Length: 495
View 1 (cartoon, helix red, strand yellow):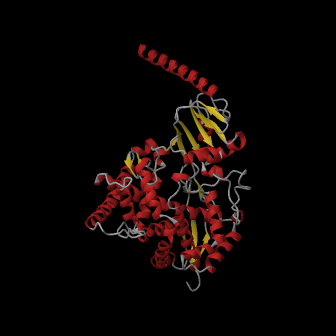
View 2 (cartoon, helix red, strand yellow):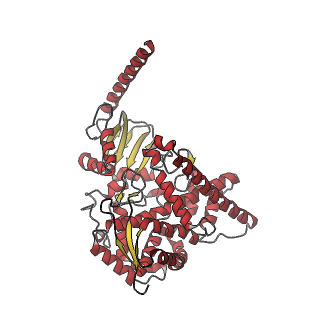
View 3 (cartoon, rainbow, N blue to C red):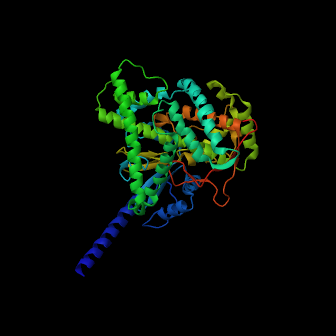
């Protein structure tokens, strides 16, 4: 009885203490606009939980920004967070790496502690070594390197992949577009010098399973952690990294035995090895550390390829009720001969459709940074004293803002007329600054090329389940489409 009474008193004292701290915090931060809280102890958590359950999490922030201002404060219990859609703040987040640091404990880094891409890859790393590695790899992904890459990708897509598509669709059938495009984009690894890597079908399946498991550590944490599914995923991740490591070690041995050999322009693995060996011009890392870094990077590439898949699936999803736009898109793709890299510039309407799909459903829906300066922090016109505050932002929210995008929920490629330049930091599908996407030119090239080849040989019509149509999952940071993106794919006459 005395123990129970002591625990109760301790609990009440703790609650009183938290209440006092919460009142002090909320009073000191009252200058920053914030939606009315749902309850004293839970802050805005009930509204956020409800929005997540209804799959309108990001739309909630759209409403808050439109109602209360471009930078708002919200509370999870007694913890304050900042959400900003202010272009000036977004510029700081993207360019001021000293004040705004990345957050390492994000779900695509590891699965319940089992390393996936870690925190040192070209996507997730930081510091001098990461900056040097990014600088070296930027030359591989530069637009000037796309011509040779295009020729290899064109031959691959028009040969091996086109034959596979013909075998799959036969005389016409409804297929999961994501599944088929996943194999296609995984097969592009062969173009990038990874012909000895896993078969495309295996990579596509593994990446799908891995990406499906990531939300479970967020939303089904305790039930998933004790399930056999988690054990199977651990085994799958270990095998993916083990198979990758074997390829990396073999290539490093080849390069070591032939030090005068020049890495070919299209040899992605060779360039990743060189980039991980380099430390501002010096080679100082242990071989095991280099191998682990290259494995992280190859795993990253496999996951990022899926972003292109989702981007094309999202475009067909948005086009479901836009038959006139889809007809115009297919007409251009079928009537335009794509022989050389520069021919892709002729696909002007195709580019407009891709840019609009990237606006309405960017691969990266949202991000977060830690504002770590110890002095008073500025949020637009507001200055507050907060230590190491989390600052959240969203490409989706920015790109659905009616201030910058009239009728933002309408799929309208015509908004991308020549000379149109979006307001700086209002359009960031590939992000910007030093953490901008290295492969954006490659992504656009491969998406255009894939569409061109498929459109010339197949008729593609959406056949979505009307009771469960595909829709973007707003609860995830990386775009994920709920339900199948089914399309009826039929060979064109003479194809």
